[in-house]
Every structure is written in structure tokens, then in C-alpha cells.
Length: 433
Ligand code: IMP
Image 1: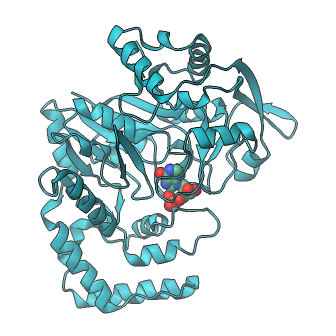
Image 2 (image 1 turned 120 degrees about the vertical axis):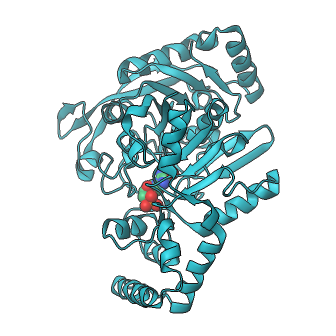
């Protein structure tokens, strides 16, 4: 069976966790391939709300193997906290049994967090992501597979402490690293994880050769991609399809299905322009009804109308085979719905996303307007989803205006919807037929 790639198509927070959790029922492997604990994935199982930053969302399916892949940056202390939380709620410690960390994945150390805490420009999550990727690109980073080799190596520790403290001093940070701390951290990482560090690309390749189903779970979204996003207001990894297999250590030929997750509107956290941002009561409606607060930092997300320019850009980069539309229910009760189809930039109409932050900031959205649909309660949406899936009627059970809205998005992006989310619960999803 080929691999399925799940990617955020906007600025992250599109609802990847919920979809991966749902699809993982059919999968034996879920692998993360980039990013780190800047991600925040929420899975709602009835009364239970699970939030993950590092653990792949397939953790809720006990038969699923979990991979933290080659292209990731992993904070071992955050992973430890998450694993302890999982042990408490499920009684399971999956390390080395069904959870494996790539020997090529880079380690986020306290130094990287100190450096990230100095950020004032981008509005990062402060988790050390950028500085860890910077060390990787500078070829001085520490990978999980290197830990056993540097363990007890005094010369390495001395040189690393000197390098880190020189950088901290140059950057104006107050924090410093000591020899004792770094050596102790390396020992702890070794003791805690040595039995689950593996050649995870090889494991995934073998699984695929045996016909097993692998889900490659993206983090962040296309517009936060270091190459293809709204630079410099982006994360420090390639979040797009091209890196899904590369960052997992397998070849692109394994992939047949690429699902782009998109909200029925759009949100963003951190700095950087968002042309359809709403600072009015409609934006407030989206934020309140959609509970738009960052899973990782708790910051309020900026909300706006669906932006087809952004989505066409994401489609060009990723070649989605299907769209999973999420949070359609949030738009319920709005009298009319707007969709941005183009921008006006310096008096000219454009249909492609500009490459510079200042040009994006000058873009004024050009909208089409569609009729709204009524708001329903959560139990009503759940009942509709259950009946739509059971009867095979799919989204034809949605109010007509909602169906028209979805059809318009599909036409504008040029990709069919495979599912429509109508609430946070795992079952509040209507499969498109
Ligand atoms: P970093 O990834 O922590 O370096 O942050 C860089 C930018 O990406 C900031 O604007 C963050 O708010 C944003 N970002 C990083 N991860 C996520 C995510 O999972 N969802 C939404 N935004 C994110």
C-alpha cells in the first residue's frame, strides 16, 4: 500500500491532528517528517481532549507505529513530558515498542531555546526550532544518532560549550551553558532514549515494501514553508510535499495520495501579513466560535476569509489529490460568506501570491460573496455527520448554501474535497462521496 501525505495548506492549525487520528485507523505507521514541538495537534475523543506537540497523532491507535523522522528537530524534555502524560492516561510507554526516533533527527538543547527566546521579529513559538535548524545547516547540530558517540567526550563538550556561549554572548543573551549541564543532558538523553533511536527511514521503507500503510504527518502549513511560504515570517523547515518523503527517509515514488488540510476560512499566529485578515465582528465570530487559540503558545489566532490565492499557491507547490475542509460549522450563522479570489496590488489585479513580505502586506483582497447558512449545535452537526456517512449521502445533506460554498472552493482551488469537518470531535467529519 502506498504512503499518504497529510499537509497543512494554509498557515498551520488547519486540523491535521484530527484527520491523521481518523485516517490512522487504516494505517500501521504514522511518521512526522519536519518541525518539532512548535506544532500542536489536538485530538478530541468524546470528553477527552488530547494535545500533542511531538507525538504523531496516530498515538491514539494502539496498533499504529510512530516515527519521529529524519527531518525533525526534537526537544527530548518536551517529548518526555508528553510521554509521561500519555503513560498516565493510557498506561502505555510506547518507546522502543511502537515509537522510534530517527538517528538523523536533530536535538533541541537548552541553548537553542535560549537563542529563540531572543526573537522579536518573527513571533516564533520560542521552542528553539529555528536555532536548531540553523545548527543543522551549519553542520554543527547534534543528532540522536550522535549521542552515544559524544557521551563522555570531554573535548567535544568543552568545544560545544565554548561555541554555544560565544553565540549567546554575541546575541546579547544572559543565559550561559556549563560543561556540567551539557554533559548531564547528553547522559540523560542517552539513558532515556537509546533503546528507541533507529534507522527509521529503513523501517518505513521495509513497511511499505510489505504493503503496509504509512501516513506522513505534516506540521505547520504551506505558507510557513521556509522556501515557499511568506518569508521571513515562516518556520525553519520545508513543510511541503517535497519534504514529506525526504524528511521521512523514503523516496517520493511511495506516495499516491496527498491531502491538503484547509479551514473553511483562514487563520494565522505570529507576525506577517494575511491579506484577508478581519478585525471586525466576523473575525471575532470565527475566533470565538472556532476557539482560535494556538495549541502550543495559547496566543489568539488572527482570523480571515478563505483565500483562494493562498490556496492556489499551496496547490501548485503540493499537488494535492484531495482537500480536507475543516471547521465548516464555524461559518454557520454568518449572513454572507466572502472568498478572496485575487488581490489588488499597487492598483493592479494579481492572482498569484507575491514573494516579498512588503508586497503581501500591500495586497488588498478582491472578494466574491456567497449566501451564508444557519448555525447548528454540536449535537446537530454530529447527528448530520453520522447520518450523511451512514446513508452514503455525504455532503448533499448539508444546507444548500454550504454545498455551494464548498463547490466554489473546489473550483477555485482546482482540487476536490475528500472530507468536510463540522466540529472538533473525531466523528464530526462528513466523507465526500
Ligand atoms: P517557529 O516555527 O517557532 O520558528 O515560528 C515561526 C513562525 O511559524 C511563527 O509565526 C509561528 O507562530 C509559526 N508557527 C510555527 N509552528 C506553527 C504551528 O504549528 N501552527 C501555526 N503557526 C506556527
